[in-house]
Image (tube, rainbow, N blue to C red):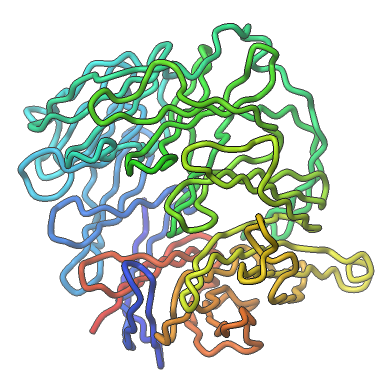
Length: 522
């Protein structure tokens, strides 16, 4: 059984401001803390307002032999805490994934149940399925048998055509289907397209050369792990990660099949304000190519791509707005051992010059992570880079590991470049390899902690606490922290959230075997 513990914690001298909808200062000294223990603590923890009270609830998948899969929902209370006893909803065996959408007049959001034959809705305000479940659309999905122990979460439920109603983009048997909402839980199949180049044989699509890769991983059980592995990768498996301002749980592939089809992703590509479709496949010669379907508000997506460009698919391809112009750009991060190349392809009003990157940057380290932010003081793009190094001499002496943070501004970038050639600041910290605290999370620069209008560096310390350092106008990170939150348990990951309508930032702290949710309290 899931064990729950609810308590109140006091954070001393807390001045907390966040960029969650604008820059503002908050001076609070109380948190309402809710501790959640789960057997699979690193699985997805979803926050959604399911009962329509304006406060987000905690939702996660739970499995118990003899009972099967359930959703556990801890509703947020008026005081900022959460109900200690979760609402339990059975997830039938034919359900592949679950999403959330406001589909009925009832307050809050309904569950969107995705099966291999169609999509259904279920109200959480009513008990059971009888007289409660409604079929939204019929569609033969390209799906395997559902995971009978894990509920997967489908986050593709959104207003795609910006008409105020929920739409669906669903992979089917041979093609994607675009279904637009018509109101009253009615949907119309507006258009469809395939992401497969049918001129390529299946063997050609899946055959890739193996490569030797090096990686560093950190977890609560095993500590710091350096691995070398030989693998045969496919550049099409989850080839694109959508970057968001707030941290999100690692997304799982929703659907898979022997009739393999590259994943389509929604992104803002051109200037019309509507999300477009992006995916990767191969041309007739077996070379990787990027495909774009521009959305038409009346007709949806064309059956054939509107733009095609050749691209080197080695490494990780990511979609992110790098220069803060509202359009999605392409980042290709590739590495061998501890040598990494970051190639930036800036969106040129709906197209890309894939033959020539806008900028190339090189880094030497493990677990290289890039984050693109906007400097509040200058409104200029800033690149935040972090990675780890393991000096040989230190390994021999005391098995240490170094964490490197680099900040690149854009005020002195060369013509045609995005960021300055050299970092504006460098922060290097040394940790014992036996002490994983402080190494599991990239330093975040997205939040204004002290309320002075400038972003601060929010990070996990070597002692497993959450702290913040100031950053000056020259992007220099201070040596000492000005704020610290001491949790009773070691913190390995954190998120800054907004869990209600009080315009005050809240925190999610992930420990080794539990998660603490902190809601600010007057």
